[in-house]
Length: 546
Image (cartoon, rainbow, N blue to C red; front, side, top):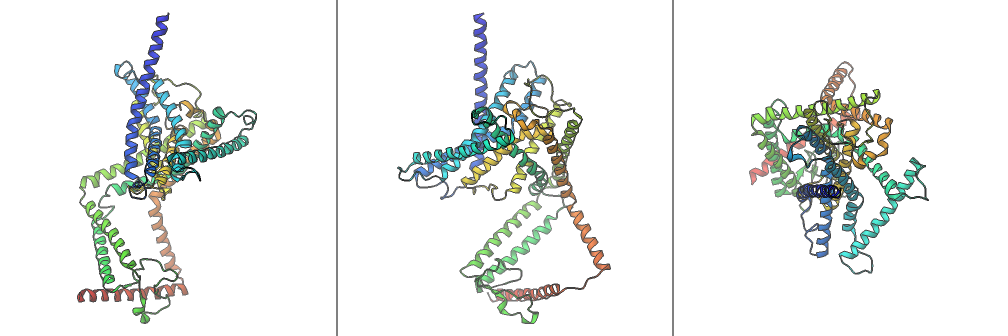
């Protein structure tokens, strides 16, 4: 009996060691990938990381490491459901294989628990510490150094934690009066899970906004990466247009370098400001009154600087169009339509899954997404189509993750990371937003019925997942928003053209007399055209003189 207990304890010990080694190897791979991604986007100039102060360098490195850790947990949260679904199907296909015996329910359960723990740690402790650490300067009168700034950061973080817990107590007292009492402050078992429940709810609401917008923006991203076919986009025409524009800007720049003057048509490079030495053209001025006073002048080389920037932008567009027009016919006529059809297919499958889940919730065939039982890996397939259905679920999950990230940065333009130009504060903000979205992604997939895999660990113990009205309303709003976004995307051009045609027909049968403002605009347009002719003539004269 003692030998059997010893063997059992030894087996449990070896299983635990094996699981921890697997977690460590997975964490190291994700950490290296996250560090490479952050190194690509973080700003690399003298002000941000290459400081002469040794303390600043240490603080910057620690903050970057904390951001990398948070991004690693973010990627782990995104991969939770795909890894779990694939592991279940692998165990069903190879139940007796020696090479997959390490893949068991304990391993997947431990992965969910670790991701939940570290996501909370990163969101509530590490990322706020990283931001406050970079903004700290040490206590007044204390010896300057890294430890002084650590003390200040910990103090401010403790005060911030007290404020957040106070707000959590107030909100919980409004929502659930029975479990909220001052006599028994159950911090670990009630208030911290309630706080994460609120954060996950915010993340799910963000996904409700970002994911339908991401469905639409992904088509634009594909159009930027891949070249459209000839019947959808004439690359040669765009290339020649950019070439002519580049030649025009070069002539203007040469004229500005010779005389320091330029004309207001096309419109000025910089808007008129109060006190600026710019002589603007009056809209009521007739064509006969146009003379050299219609020039505008930018002093101290500002005109040349603006023209150089404009020339650089036009050159980049021309070079991009030149490279795109040499794209092979296979990529233009086969790869682009295939990518668009794949996006349409995945979007349609996601919307159909949501509609099916809504109907099953209404009829009562499907339970609420809150987890009530312990799931055992490798018992049965979670999809009616078997491995094919599981692969489809994984593809839809990854597509939802890509759409949510695309929609997020479509809304938050200022926080969008730029290669080698993103400051550390923006890196912290990006890691926080991505962590919130990734932590809520398994909850979103379970609410929408994308997969039947149960939410393991504390992910499935979120109380608001048991609210039938809230879950049903979320499904309806998501399906409606995604459908309307796609309809608006593919019918906006047709609706705009129909509106213009009906408007032109109405103007033909019911002509309206031009108003005073329209006559002023017409006079201004005529004068601007005259100024354009003067500009082209003077430009050619200067070039001939040179």
